[in-house]
Length: 294
Image 1 (spheres, rainbow, N blue to C red):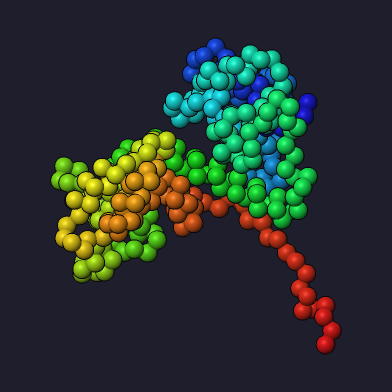
Image 2: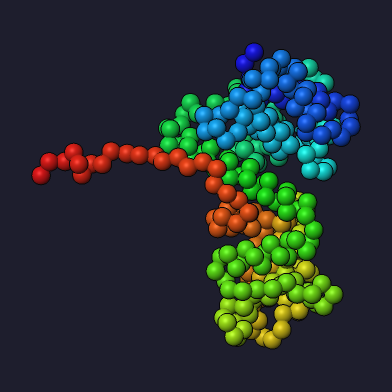
């Protein structure tokens, strides 16, 4: 048997969760392996890079796409349950494809494109792309998945972990040494970063680990602004969530830097903080200088 493509695993993945209970990822994998009739050798087969098995790579994408479409949820790490929307898709007893997932706005927002309709033809993005365009699109998609995973991992840790992470990231970015303030005495300030050795130039940090779906409003920014000492104190509010338009306007007026979950994950990727390079592909082109005659 050939190892199924990631989208060919959708139905088996949902079948493993069809009873409505919470199931560990390992049990879901067993269901997919059984449905596909895969041998131990096929399950252990590696990608050309040798860094991961083909099966784990594909079921990982299957999991990500189903989750972004809202068909499954992950209440705890490496455990999943089917949603009401997932049950409806599974019980429809029809092929489940990426076009099926495009009926859900959350998947379209994640993967790009437009909502599908019952009469829509399946999307075939690669047919109209150059190889360079395909490479850039896939690179962007991989980064979106990585950002989502980063925020998920951060949210599963404690608020204290997040405060330390933020200060360490700022140090990684070259802002100088910093420290987390004492929890019982922070008065709205979670961390301080010194930009010079003598401590003349200080950035006051608020670090709030919220659900990525939460929106932070103006009151939280007002409270933080009031906690910043002096008239010229610099403030930075970092969160895994989002900011409302009113909060963004208030922060701009008060010269407070805002970093939401999307920007935080991007900075972690940009500065190689909490991530590592898995592959490096070199795209080469003709050296025209060599072939041009004077």
